[in-house]
Image 1 (cartoon, rainbow, N blue to C red):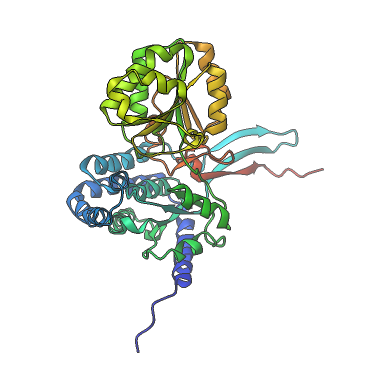
Image 2 (image 1 turned 180 degrees about the horizontal axis):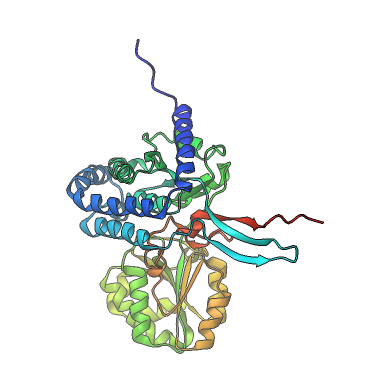
Length: 430
């Protein structure tokens, strides 16, 4: 008589037990071993490019046949450039300083003890993500270097790609003499597995969801372990006065159109009324040439109406547009009085992800940095730079809009905690 398949509960419990055991080994792993695994993984990704793309094509073909949106399919693709960036990110993480074991803030107390803090791994984190198979490598590489174990649960739409990538991660761990179970992929697409993963505080120390707003809201509401999250990326570009017009056009164009699908793409454009007449016709022509729909306030609508090629793409904005993350060739545009009005608008409608000001006024720039309440705030730079790789973190586990523990791109330090350490030589409390 054949044995029945294990239940989802039993499957997830087994993954949790193995992850917890592996995390003990990873916490004491040396930097050289962790780096050896990362460099091996980079080499494997390059060697297995053709096989990985073959597995990826199964997911891409299914997505297209299922009628999924082009932006969604774009997030699935493992092209040559994406695979090379994945390999390079592993090498960059290997080159980073190992935060584990670092002691800081050491202070000698009157009693004679020395008190400080030591950075330690979180333990086990669960990563729940949609569509982007490259997250498998980002999460795995950061888990390895930070001395954690991770349980990965990718979307069903990328199951073939994720299985292939996770298998290569385990191969690299094996080559470095580290436990394979430090990185495990949930092997089933049953959604019940997510419910189990977010309710296992015995085995999982933190959950990191990365995907659509609905997924993250559900996990935040139902999880029984802490969650590092961001709900959406309604990122703003504010074109100030005074401003370098050429820079303003270039930054705005890049922030919106370099790629439409990432959470750090600009969704809202604010323009100071003193720059409106000169700037809006320039950016309107750029957006029109690229087929970007513009949802405008009455004042920007009237101004852009004078750009002939823009007319078919102009729409009147609703109040909902100011807080919408489109992830598509659509942008909301509003003329505001000045930097005060821009800051007020962003803090009301933004998602506390990433916002940038384009200006030549230093005082305006400094006020924007201090007063915009977002995880990343920029001056004269595209919002598309809000990324762990671009920030020098090697890779990121996600971008947190929380205010506790980790905020902004979450790299190695975001996957560690600190504990107090006391160094003495026999001191007794009197």
